[in-house]
Image (cartoon, rainbow, N blue to C red):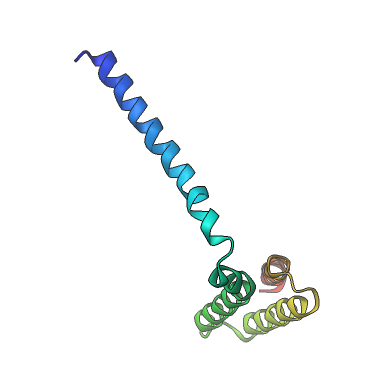
Length: 108
């Protein structure tokens, strides 16, 4: 087999594998749309992710200065309050993270 034919075969196989891997999630998603487990996870997963991130962050901050712990507590309170008020996980996480980074940059 010539080099050009070999390269063309490699490109064709790579393209087929790439296409199949990108199409697979859509094919697997169709039966899951009516699943009770997926509905349950879509409701409870954002809060669970926020709790895990908060616990991890608080666990790693035990050796910081009192000012840094104060900024962290304030950012966690803002994040929790915003999430309880608006109920949007992404907004809460972004605002809480931005607040914490801002406080640490200005007075950390």
